[in-house]
Image (tube, rainbow, N blue to C red):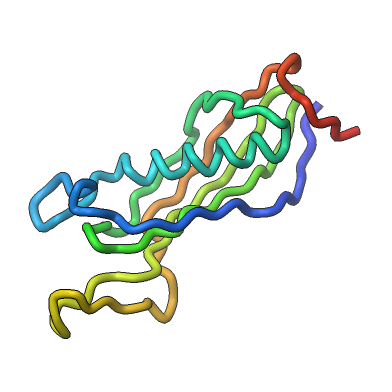
Length: 136
C-alpha cells in the first residue's frame, strides 16, 4: 500500500566553509548538497517513524547553480509518498546568502529570492520492526 501525504518540511541552513571548497574559485563539490539532503532525510524519518532508517537511492539529482565557500545554503525536504517500509522524498537546496567581496572582505548579501542550486528525489526505508510511530 502506498499513501500520498502532505507532510511538514524539514529545513537546515548552514554556511559553506573554506573546508567545503574543493575546486578552483572556491567552488563546493555538488556532493555536499547530497550530504545535506541525507541529514534532512534522517530528520524526516525520525519525525515520521521514530527511527533514522536508511537512504536507499536517489531517483533524480539536478545541480542547477554553483555553490561557493561563504554561501549560506538552506536544504529542505519532505516526504511525498509512504509505502509499507519506503518513504519517497523530495529535496531542494537554496542559496540564501552569498559573499559580497566588492563591499569588503567580510561583506555578505541576503538574496532577495533564494536561488535553487540543487533538486533531488529519493527513497528511504525504515524496516517495519523499527517503525515506532503508528500512522493508522
